[in-house]
Length: 202
Image (cartoon, rainbow, N blue to C red):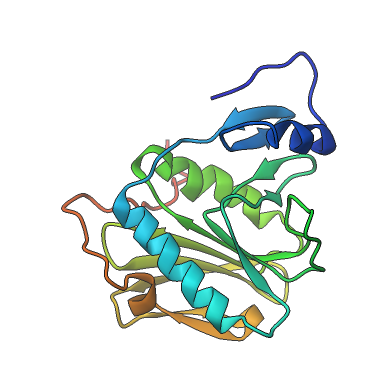
């Protein structure tokens, strides 16, 4: 939901304002946008699994996972909140956004599926420090991984099944799909990961 204002908010003004709010917001085009509240258990289970695994895998590395309460600056002056991220920048305990986000993870939900998979993905791809983007399907064992190549382009990999592994090569770690979906009971719902629109169609 948009919180409409007469003039665009700066990052500093947004973060000062956000700290006084009970709900989480993103800053889009200079306008605070309230995030959807609530998540299905399967979504929450996956987020907790990935966070716990990353916390252990990254211990002592100088990189730290962060939750959806943290944020990243995608476009200049634009703030997004991924379900999970990894920050490898200098640690400032008072900071409200990641200093050097290297990885973002989104667990898809019905209400935000197309936005997370297409629009938000496009913004993430513009981030200079970002090396990996992970989209997780909650209704089946399926993950889409984007990895930044040496020539700065993005390579996509689709991973299916609990035996698959997600190579976070920039951090030197490999996340097993079995850890992502540990203890998860898949709901009887259609999968949410969809193909990107065919730009040549129509």
